[in-house]
Image (tube, rainbow, N blue to C red; front, side):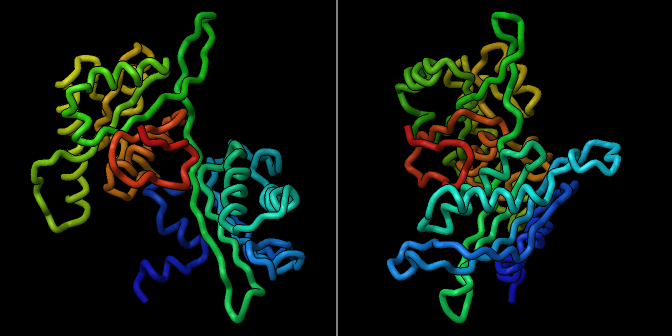
Length: 302
């Protein structure tokens, strides 16, 4: 059995460890929690309670020190079982997928929770288990700007993805005008350029080549409109947005420096990761691509 297949069926805690960065977070977990519940889309499942098993792993922020053995300073295990009970009591559901999404969202509302692995399995459908597993991350802290009253206020930017046709479009300026008209800070992201790029045959170095190719395209977009300013780091982005500038994201530094950064080299997936990291109001995609699912940030096509 290959490593990928083994991890696909491994406990969520093992998957959490395998996907951690160089500085992994603390984890708490709930294993093999079984509840009888009426759930299912088929008529034969309606009105009949069946056993459903939950396995949940939560990656959390480091606990404040000293703990002083104080339960109020940690994310209590009881919050996991309480979240499960609350979602099961809210309404009858057809899909495990819906239950998993709602449970993950409730858990990520806890201030300490940063990433959650949820596996839910039906135990009584046959001589096997049927289940679903999802991984969700919380959006990071929003940008803050000074309001008219001198007080700091949170601001949620719009993250926009442009394909190459949009970058080259004759109406680019008009599109940028429309995006700015929403009155929110704008972070533009781009894909790889159309010209060939080096192929290394080595995944880590190829990842760097691809990220640098995206950055070349970011500079190409900046050359088309003076409002677009290329930025690499979260600090630079914060600084530019506070000054009303429209940012074009050069991804290499943030992606490679991130402890829990994206493993995908797909430009749209990278843009979505940025949107989640920046607690964006939404992500708008100007491209003929499939929209990514399962994000805490709303994704829509232009």
